[in-house]
Length: 146
Image 1 (cartoon, rainbow, N blue to C red):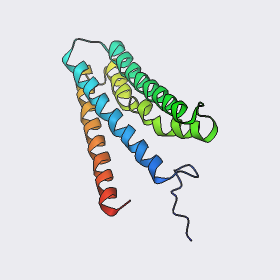
Image 2 (cartoon, helix red, strand yellow; image 1 turned 60 degrees about the vertical axis):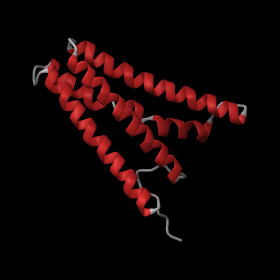
Image 3 (cartoon, helix red, strand yellow; image 1 turned 120 degrees about the vertical axis):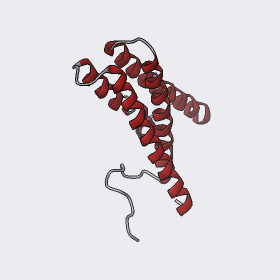
């Protein structure tokens, strides 16, 4: 039997883990789009914008991680450790990485490469494209029976 795992997926990672990770990525991206659009409508500087983006991502990640740990504790009567904890961290990592693109664009605005408004709208556009691609991948996989 051939090994059909991808090289970029940790060993022992099953389809459910990848589906959970994709769900988190789509959720984080949609949330970040809302945040950067909201920032673009307000009167905020680059420092305030990057602080908002980073604290949003950190807050999302912490909320998901605490919820996962509490759910695990409720079901298994103990906190997740070892492989279970690594799975939680792997699945929830897109909640942190969703801040990278907007933070880089805001940094470019702080360096006067582009306006903050343009940086925030670009971040929203890139996030929208990323979310659309994620949804398309999920639909194609569902249609293919994966």
